[in-house]
Length: 314
Image 1 (cartoon, helix red, strand yellow):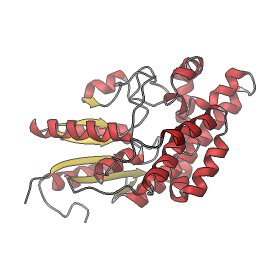
Image 2: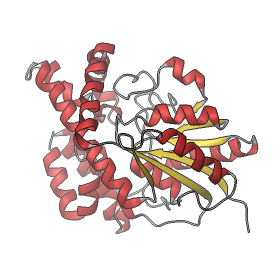
Image 3: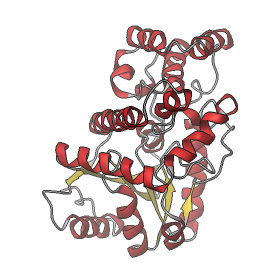
Image 4: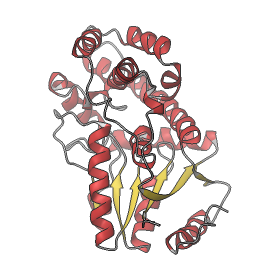
């Protein structure tokens, strides 16, 4: 039997505590972290993307953080290829890879070894038509196209992100398959997937408090930089926490209303994240309010997993 590299993934909704757990576990098991967040790749977008602090980043080596300028395009295929390369390098050095993040399709591309050959290219005419709709501010039209084309994707991706809507439409129309159901490749690694969640009201409180903290840290100023350069950063500007503040900078909405919109979109995103991970992956879930010693329990299961035993999910 061929040797399969062992990878630990930590998934779950925004603000649940994935990053902190990842750092703690990576320190304990001599590992390094691969970010599974589609926004943390961008330099200078630190607050709205909830990056770990410089001090936290020094505790454990992080990969795929601050690797792109904000005007660069970065795809799930880029993530998949780079992550596989990093995993191989870490395994050679006897380091445990911890993939930590909440971008479901990114994580699933790695876990399922999805065949993404058809999703990085496509119909140029179709893309131009969809991009023209985006430029005209017709997000609702794009959402309706996706809803009619691929209801599964409509129900699971962030439909407030026009670029993700466009990508989902492109994938379905060029491959005939949902972006959530791309063809699985052969198994290339052994994954233990840890899922963190919390009671809904508590999770929503955490999300609201996180947004307030981001504002205190300088979110408005960071979002203004995105707003002032939005024509040059078509992908990065769509992140939750930035686009909701554009009406405030336009003078068409109050700051409080825009912050409420960030909180609302973050809560909706958390719900979609949970739906995606529950439907697409074999996750060992932990409610952080129900299991008081969940970090200890998780550590014990990781020890079994790394020791080669196959009862870590039991």
